[in-house]
Image (cartoon, rainbow, N blue to C red; front, side, top):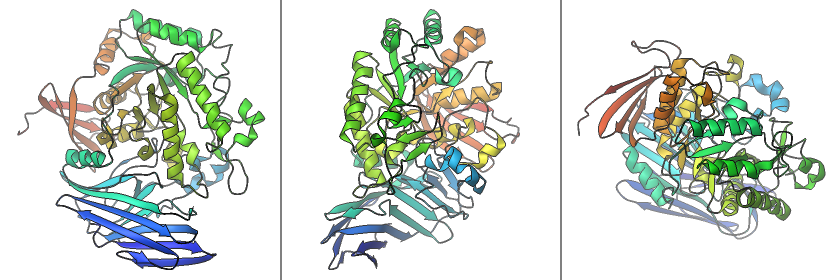
Length: 572
């Protein structure tokens, strides 16, 4: 695949834009580029190193290959961050982009900050797709995976164009100034079965399998949202213990702090006894204690924003970098500043060692790399920031969320692999026109299915919560059962937010079944054009097929949102 690739390199030297194309090594007065290719029957590895003789500023660097797409192939696209939709596309589909209808609302809601829209163009052509870090083409059970072995020098964007019969791999490095050797690409292409290509990919990345175990738990967000207090938390904690629920972790989500960014300033009207008391109560009930943080951001109402404006990340014009519209709107912190790093270290030391929490759910992490620096790409900033978080948390547990996945591989114990579920199926119709990272139960299910191959390779998959309750929710019973089925089979960190004191006997049985963490193995997943998804899995040495209907209509006798399971004896 890489052997006949063409390299296209554009860079600035003394304010003059240079454009070169070549298919091997390259030498000039300004820069040398070394291309190294290693091949065997099932795998190719390609490295590309730029070695400038003088300071240069890169504009673009792309590897282009001709590729003959088979009409029966599917193309898998891994979205930019946790919440971005990620799935297999048929060749005649279009990739969703930020709707033009959202343009008048961008200033207010900042939809474009949550994804890749500010630095990646969408062609809006049929058969044009792009994804980050890795992707594949699939013909039945034969996979052709293309992946980056490192994002430390910039995000790797894999573009496929069916009409042009090309695959273009670009490095996110526009504006990067270098005067030293720079390894732009470290790529692999692997052919084989699903298990073979992904096992080989993570082995070549030297990502060891996660040490953390699969867990079940309760989290406050998807029932109470920010409206939590000590009474609500203790009530739900005691309810789980009194019902002898064998969960592993009890997590406090957003709402305990005064404002986002001021993590050690607890809202005393809600939690008069502080957060250590809560952690102690959780431990007394034999559960691990988890707590939510968004360490790289602060909202406009926070003390940090008011008193430490120099901590806020600034763009090339000196303007503060707005990261999104949640809360009172929020801004990115400048992780390059020593005082910001010291503050974050102190927060983690307090939360983990003084308060005694065992797991931190770290959210909105994408904000740290919203803009590149002169000497660092977005991808490099993200990778270094994840390494920093890992060092801060040490041997305690990290649940990553709202984070580009490549930089999180091997650095978090658990990771959200989809958007937030909602209290309805797919939000309001006009919201479906907006960003790919929006809240949607349907999209969360699609991502849980689409990213199942990452589970127990990159981290433990967190598909978000399931619901069984009847209050404060508009999902139908079959929709709730479908969410529970997908979470149980495609995730190994399984949460709910229900108040189980309101459960009836049947709901208690469903809860215990969903939280059972049976020894199940996904063998194969086949999405169909009509909206059905066929799932092959093994449970207790028996092979099963599950059919998911995620459409809003009956297909071949299968009702909308229904999960139909039939035991089959597959050929060994």
